[in-house]
Amino acid sequence: MKRPQQPIGLFDSGFGGLTVMKEVALALPQENLVYFGDTAHLPYGNKSPETILQFALNNATFLMNQNIKLLVIACHSACSHALQTLQEKLPIPVIGITEAGLRLAEQREKIAILATTSTIQSGIYQKALSHKEHFAIDCPLFVPLIEEGYHDHPSTRLIAESYLNSIQGKVDSILLACTHYPLIKPTLEKIFGPTVSLIEPAKLCAEQVRLYLTHNHLLNTQTEFPSLKFYVSDDPEKFKRLGKIFFGKAIEKVEKK
Ligand code: DGL
Image (cartoon, rainbow, N blue to C red; front, side):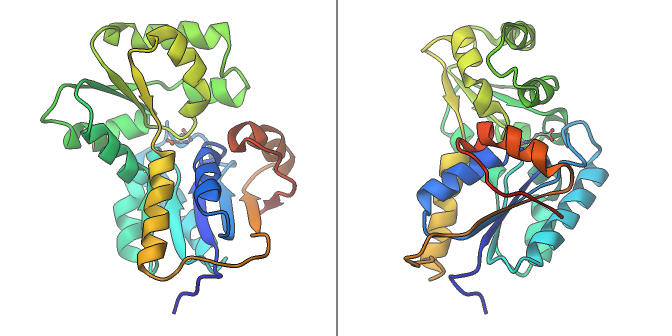
């Protein structure tokens, strides 16, 4: 029997999922949240489907042991290879960031999907969008650049231009199908200008969580401050330092799994 006081769990390969957690915390300010960043194994985006699935299963087991009531997979690369398996295996609801991404992409006409190599190779977005004009582009250097703090840097702009010049003038929307990519929005805005919308699925994902909890009478209505816990599989200090850029505010305490 699940109870409203139980936390919501979220995981990502490392930092990117914090952009999703930020939206969940804003949409559901009374919820207890527990985040796991698998920093010892990042990036997921250049790993094989089997490896990503195994990491995702391990992450889900860790969060299940934190007694979560719902799991959010806050990583497109992990969702691409593990969402269905986790939805089948876990005794709790599992919501993947790709579900919001797919919903938003469906609503657009000429769209480009930017993601990691593993997400693009899974074909998850291309299959769902096969009836409309779309471009699927993997941008493997974005994650390391963002993690080095180069999210708004001339070198990132050069690399982005070389990945994306071929779609200039051909799209009206770009889906940021990697939870790291919201950080390079300013760079992409400079390249594409105001006529191309940059779509981030995190807000809709948070809304999907809110709706599920509401319909299933699992919303936490506590009046005290919620607990936000952060766990990682590698250096907690590095996570604190970099994590605040993704989360939008300081992260006080990080524990190693
Ligand atoms: N944040 C992950 C995603 O959404 C990508 C980062 C990585 O490659 O580990 O796909």
